[in-house]
Image 1 (cartoon, rainbow, N blue to C red):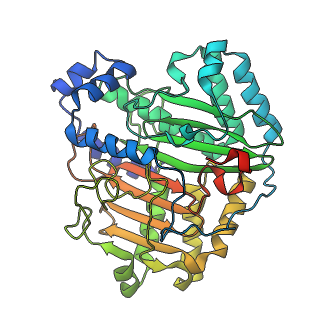
Image 2: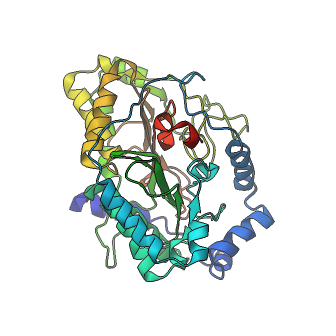
Length: 425
């Protein structure tokens, strides 16, 4: 939750960039639901840059899964099966409760094999490009409540509240721009992979605008990666959820770390001085460019499951104990969806790799600057980005629009490194 000062500052900031709702973009969309909105985008290929990006995503989606690496070579044996005290019996019971409330047709549409490619079909835009699984807003209230119960049982208490905040802020944005049929608290798809089990691997995927959670469970261990959490704006300033705010702590901690570095370390960490720097690779190859209009500075977003992301910035092992503590505080926030013991275990694994963990920065690092940062190791990648407007009309990145990504490289995503041979993606 933001402080009162931060609350009013952020609220005033985004309120200055509310769009003109008489614009045909909004007037046409008001008459559409999620399906017709997506169909209009696909059939008209408008805007062209976004349509081109979705075609690049399709090519990436069709690639066999390998995993994100720093040099193209997967580092083996980084992850192992462990007991993280995940409440697997309760999670299985919550999932079976959902299944009991579905029709045979709904069960069929919900369920996928454990090794289905649809694990990788998540994407963040509000457009329903791949209508897999079940759409929460189309289900009965008991079924929708059951999906929320699965999330609440699986995630940490703070992580569940974070997910709810993202969904509620999406609803708030839908109200701001008068598109509630396209963006609301239940405009998310839910997929089940494998059979809920206390002994074998299985999992689920939730995806939609500004919230994508991929969850793999095996016995009492859990992998929640990839994740995408975003917000535009990142605060609700009116209505029943007034005061809801997310992703401020992550950003503040990153800025604190950057500002704590020596001048020499800041120079090394700052890979680009401008958020859209002329030195960035922008050739038009949307599968590999360093910047594009949708992902902006993010490297590890939707469909980037096999991307090569070289290390850059300052090495965490060269930082002071106090600065390394901030790194772990950042990890705490990015891994917040994980249950407490699982999150602790993954932070301990991250600490073991501090010699190969890098912190990098793009943009300024004054108190009012928008910015991007990344923490990258062999076992985690955290990306934080201040974004330009998509529905709000700020052309330059602002601190009230935030995107964050969690990846587990070297086949940690989707729990791949701990899967049995018959579960491999």
